[in-house]
Amino acid sequence: MLDSFQDFAKAFSSWIWDWPLLVLLVGGGLFLLFYSKFIPFKYLKHAIHVIQGKYDKKEDHGELSHFEALSSAIAATVGLGNISGVAIAIVTGGPGAIFWMWMSAIVGMATKFFTCTLSVMYRKDLDEENTLAGPMYVITEGLGKKWKPLAIFFSLVGLIGVTPAFQANQLTATFIEVLGTKPENQFITKLIIGCLIAVLVGIVIFGGLKRIGKVTSKLVPFMVIFYMISVFIILGVNYDKIPAIFNSIFSNAFTANAAIGGGLGYIIKTGVKRAAFSNEAGIGTAPMMHGHAKTKEPIREGLVAMLGPFIDTIVVCSLTAFMILSTGVADITDANGVSLTLSAFKSVFPNAISEILLLIAVLIFSLSTMFTFSYYGDTCLGFLTKPKYGHYYRYFYVAIIIVASIVTLDVIVNIVDSFFAMMAIPTVISTVLLAPKVRKAADIYFKKLKEGKFG
Image (cartoon, rainbow, N blue to C red; front, side):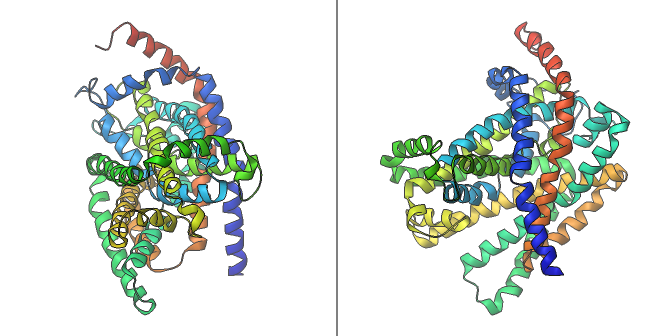
């Protein structure tokens, strides 16, 4: 019976992360992209000015600065998917899959603009210092109480979807591989590593939203720059292959032979799927963070949120892709996922240094995701019960880290992936229905901006 359940969980996870979710996310995203008339993309420079604090006002309501909100949201998206997911995309879909990752990121930027604008537009003030935000509040406040079942559905699947099982399990496995731990010593080693990870995560998440924001605002720039420098060194060694990389990406994007598993549709699906899994546009997680930004202008935070998919997919995922393609390791090894990325590092750096560099990257990327995901779970539990009870989710969250570190959790990971995907259903539905509200607010905001009314 257990085997049957495991098979069902695996099959359902594969199915929902296939065409059903891609049609929902890409279809909804394309509608929002064209509905916005691409206008928000004209104001990316303005978004950078917002992040720099040019429009900050102390009296604005909210718990996080624009930069802290963006950093916290990026902390959740820039994770193992950027290291292992890109490698899987290249192996299964060929270099052309990267082109479709880029296209998906552009669509995702439009989705993030709408979802995060709505999150600020329909957030609830809990008291003078604290707010409640996320798709569940967008649904109940924006669409009305009759839509509350959709908000409850989002929160229920969110409780499972944002658990740290995958991150904790993969991070521990990476440590075990790098340390070369003998099989007979692996259980106790995993337990120790799991407890240490739980302590590190606990120190941050039990400090609440503001501590998460402060930590991630310092951690995210460091981890992106650290990874960029490491990859740029590898690209510097293989600089002569960079033109060929661009050629292979664009030429294989429309060539069926590039995919191991099938034709052109398979290549597109592979790239879009990996991008969706990585930048989470339309899933509904980022609005729970961006909704806490200190601002009176929802459009302003929507513009900031747009930068998330750009940084996550077009910058960080591309770095991994270029590194793998420039070293040619995908053609000479059967490795996949993190192992393939490690092979790329080893092609330039000595074994010990490459393992340390990748271990640091995996550690930082995993921890940053776990910091932010915990707050998403708090928000979901708080909505289902009362906001004051949301923090109890953190105890469950820390316990999952330890359990996931010491046991094989294939069935759990499949369940978590499935629930995570289902969060997109209420998010996209509510966003499309409320899109006219965003466009009306955008017209007003951009008119004021052109008139110089914001200083």
